[in-house]
Image (cartoon, helix red, strand yellow):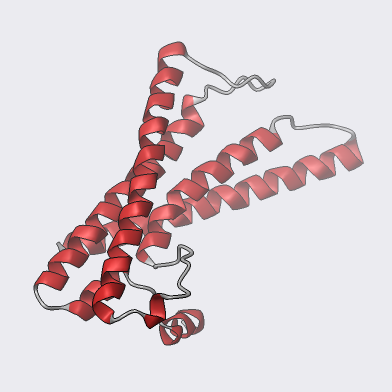
Length: 186
């Protein structure tokens, strides 16, 4: 199980880099569009559409990495007051709810992509982009997010059952202030 978790974490790291390249590429495209409009009175056309697709795909590809890094925002006002056993239960509940929400989005996304492919849907812009092109990698990001959420949930439960409460918390718990500071300095 730990090997699968490490592989998934590594895969998510590669995907977040791909998303970063998409964002940088779209920023360069929009910058070129602005300069061409200003100085040459010419438009590339579709830079805003392409950058929107890039942002959606990059965001979806980053969800899993944020999950492994425990970087999703949590409301933890009472968390520190709970005993450790209840903290773990709260961590599992939070992960289950987040994964459940992602599963609903992925399911709806699956249906949307199916409809897009069935009907050959295209954007209503001058580019007439086949919508499956941005939707499929976007959906893959959500599906990976769900799979990684389930993987972390099962991995944390197994570690907890083996008596490794710290290892379980390292998978799904909130990072301590020291861990957050260490991450910033690395």
